[in-house]
Amino acid sequence: MYNETVMDHFEHPRNLGEMEDATVVVDVGSPECGDRTKLYLKIEDNVIVDVSFRTLGCAAAIASSSMATEMIKGKTLEEAWNLTNTEVAEALGGLPEQKIHCSVLAEGAIREAINTYRKSQGLEPWQ
Ligand code: FES
Image (tube, rainbow, N blue to C red; front, top):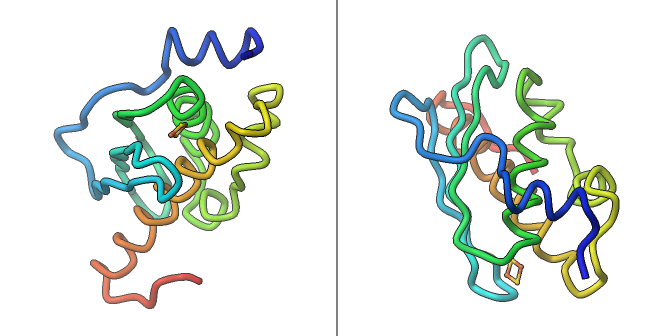
């Protein structure tokens, strides 16, 4: 069902775990299946200097979170905001059609974290 890249990120997730000194932490659920991702971002000067996650979900959700965290590490908040679930799925070499929503969970968690951070700074959330 899954390709080698997906299996690799599922079996050896990058950036897995909690972060003591995170700037922002969010816990986001998938409306489709109820699976959840907790995302930790450390932000300095508008850049995501560190990121980690915990996902209670399927293999595709874990692999997507792992890949997405790799893709936003070292990026500006604008760049991270613009990362789409399609790009995450493509970086994984593709996901089965019925598993696309699992990559949406990762994208949603990143956007939720960025807007939680913006609100904490007195800034308007992005749409
Ligand atoms: Fe729920 Fe994949 S089935 S995130």
